[in-house]
Length: 65
Image (tube, rainbow, N blue to C red; front, side):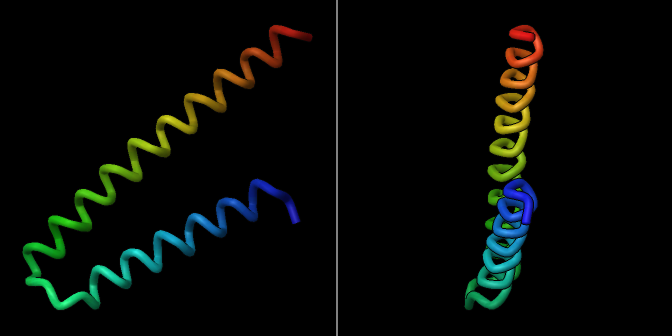
């Protein structure tokens, strides 16, 4: 299996588990929604950062050719 697909599958599973844990937590609905929103913002920022790092690495690799 491709390493990229394995990592993507792991991250998707981790995200699904985190959402399930938050939804099943005994907190109020408003607090749970706030926590989900916060985690989504954090995950989005981390994903953007990784994408930019990948693009920088790709650009560097193309310049070396």
